[in-house]
Image (tube, rainbow, N blue to C red; front, side, top):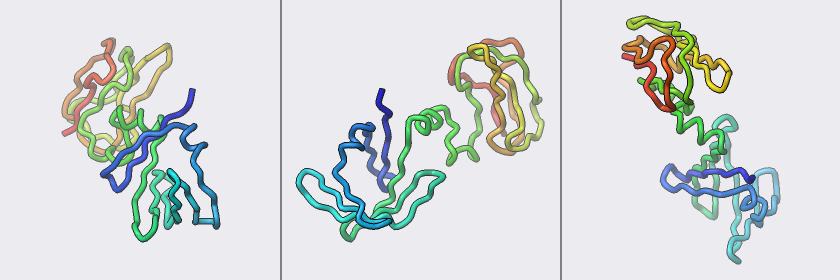
Length: 161
């Protein structure tokens, strides 16, 4: 099965493409940062001005226009759908179940101050124990589940103040 990618341009336009689309791209690298691209019979000079490897963001110059391009693979897309994307983790106010499972243990109490990456609870799914950690520092407002509960994907587990 071919992997799918999403590309966001200037946070305005979004495109989806497959590995096959990437392989069939008619692009020739002319220097370490420059490419010659043919698209539908038209020629484009493309330059990668800068990139941020960690979040796959690139500043691309085509002709005299500059574009910010962000590339997301399937894993990035799944993480974002679960509400754990890197850009949004500091603003999370609710922890949702990433998958259906059984609550084995809860390591926090309401009103408790937790540090980033501290364990909140243990969720058993498909015979594996998954430790759900805190995406940020904060105070636990409420705990919507208890030990032994069965939860569905995206069910509310914990809320922050």
